[in-house]
Amino acid sequence: MNTVLTLVVIQALMGAFDTLYHHELKVCLPGKKSAQLELKIHGVRSVIYAFLFMILAWVQLKGGFTILLASILVVEIILTLWDFVIEDQTRLLPPLERITHTLLAINYGVILAFLLPEMAGWYKAPAGVELTFYGWQSLVMTLFSVGVLISGAKDWQRSSRLPNDYLSLSELGRYVSAQKKSILVTGGTGFIGKRLVQVLVHLGHDVMILTRNIPAAARELSGKITFVTHLSQLDEHQRINVIVNLAGEPLASGRWTEKRKQLFVSSRVNVTQQIVELVDRLEIPPDVLINGSAIGFYGPQKNNILDECGEPIKSFSHELCQQWENKALEVEAKGVRVCLLRIGIVLGQDGGPLAQLRLPFEFGCAMGIGDGSQWMSWIHRDDLIGMIIHTMGCLELDGPINATAPHPVTNNQFSEGLKKYLPTYLSVNVPAAPLRVAVGEMAEEVLITGQRVVPVKIQRHGFNFTYESLDNALAHLVGRT
Image 1 (cartoon, rainbow, N blue to C red):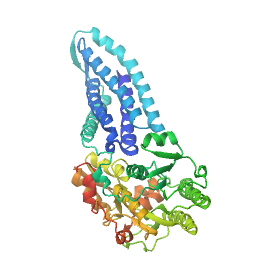
Image 2 (image 1 turned 180 degrees about the vertical axis):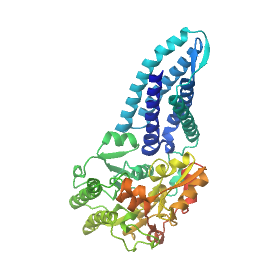
Image 3 (image 1 turned 120 degrees about the vertical axis):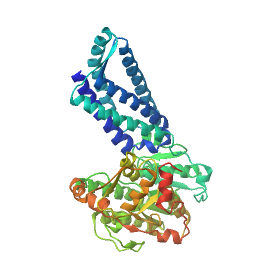
């Protein structure tokens, strides 16, 4: 049994990685309505795992009681196969998650290969329940049992209060629906772009998406959408009213090596160069280019309140945003109105920064960053979508536009806001020093410092926020309203 338990410990560690890294951080299952059934299956499986871990760690079920253990194993296998089917029907698994699932399946098979002969011996013995103790393995298995039981309860609870992925008529009412337009979106399968495309399709616009992987994009998005893999595929007769450029490698995803910095620049500037070349050859240029940028344009700041005229501080993020904005402004020579959205921390239900920020809170630990005094200029994703649509129709808007909510908060205030809806039992702040060691420059520019940005221009031009305060936004985003 020692071999079996060692393999089960390995299985539990791989399962914990799969849950925390893939389900919680990368895919953000708790925020997807389409994942409701998958979460329920995970909840039931987790309870079964909790019982299995305790049984294997502390008792031997002999005689007829062995049939009980065999039945639990059969039910778990059926649920696992069902889970695989549901996953393939509802989402496209990233390569690492599929590899993890394959390793879990292989290891599970090895566990059964060692466990079944043991169970055969138990079945031949007189019926009874014999207490056992396998040292550290029993103790570790008990810890895993408690952890997986808590995780399962969380999955079941969250499956019953997921937000609706589909837009109701009342939700659509918050957007200004101009006359039907032909709209090209880059970054249309990302966290912001996917929601934007969903809204535009519902509003009846003709939507075209630039994507490297058409089958994957078609699986993620529904409705009447045209896909292209390169803008050179569009000829000079193509009519495009609006271009929304959201392409770019995410910045908050690890240490900024020189190679990754080059990727950050190229993933933004190269696509924008394609847009410049497209506009050059179109017989009729688009009316407006709405180009993504970021509040990182202002660099790491302290308490200065920054409107669109705010003075930037030199940094990598400033230089990156400036290059991106300058490239987009080249189409002004063709008479195209250019709006540069300096986007803040975008909060949404099914991904983005909130998925990472809320995870420790879900398990009872309020976690801050550094001393917590750094500013977080946030915006609800639906307000950002509304802002993009408002910008399409507001001919007076051009140049830099701060895409943030009117009331930025400090990191400590953000944590207090989350605690209101996700009760915690422990509060910790991760010191700045280890963050600097772990992720270097990224920690300094993204995590430890921030910007106190206000959306002066967009409000002056008539845009009304649905979620002005963090409290209202979090109340909606954590599924309480």
